[in-house]
Image (cartoon, rainbow, N blue to C red; front, side, top):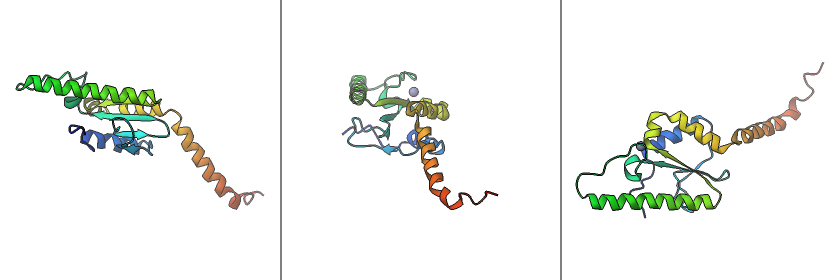
Length: 150
Ligand SMILES: [Zn+2]
């Protein structure tokens, strides 16, 4: 559908690796049923992340100039890309999703800062992990319970 939106780009892989390391796992990739097919989606938390290439998606930080030839063509193409991105993000927001766009240049500058942004959006994911751990501990306890009592 959108030819310029390629999956598993290098910035995307870098971010996924960092998220995995940070323990922010359990994300889904390129979910077809979600508007805009977010690169990364935490479905239970309703957090959608788009990793956008600065050139195709017209990064506001980089403010890249148009290619020298065929400018009207590029101008129209980029305008459509940006409009489509905005429409998809608005659709997600309407369904109570939190949407985060991470630009390629932001990832290049500081991957961990982006991981922190995602962590903040996910909010209480740590609590969930702790609960899981407690559950496992509780399951182990009956075998050792009381044995160390004098
Ligand atoms: Zn950029």
